[in-house]
Image (cartoon, rainbow, N blue to C red):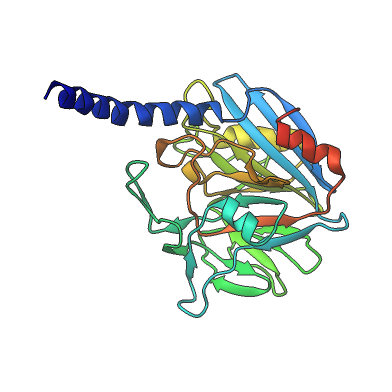
Length: 304
């Protein structure tokens, strides 16, 4: 009987300690709090910025030259066979793997969504969701325009533009929608602008340079997120002309491909669990050519 009690207590302790161990391990797997600049692929440069004031936050920036040979864009296609506004949720790394991309970021807002605990949330992978705002992939519209949702559009030449009215011009090849347009010279006037995990797409004036920006958030002492005012200052320093705020929070994810598979560049926090990806409705992906063995080897080893 005594032995059974001991085994019973051991089982209880194991069940309590295992989540703590896994949570601690996930924290150690987050990107280092050190600055980094690296060319990932031909036409794509990655930068990790570390900010300590007015709060700690980490910014991940992928700069893409849309005119560089080998660079191609793709947005997530929807499900026309079922509904004109329906998508199947999947993590950003799964989207990258499915389409054999070199870089991908989560994109537009979607519904229905709940998040209570790491195990009680919706949608799960493959769950049906609807997109807010216009969504176009490979010239096919999968979600119609909405006036209150500005949209990031790319034409046949991959030139980008952000349209405030929410409807891309004819001939648009790919498009994803957000909720705010950010302009460095015209700051937003919001009643509330709290630090948050962010996903941002920014363009230069010509629409030929794209910045995919992810800010980690909701992680005290590691990265507490950025305000939209912070982002406005950031895109000004980058030289961007305009940007669009995409789905953030636990959705904010930036992932790249390496020889060993998909690799998270940031620290997503779905379900309050670090390095846990959220299944989302839409993504923005980049095809690119390799630049040689050395850069890939550095990324795999985590070296700056």
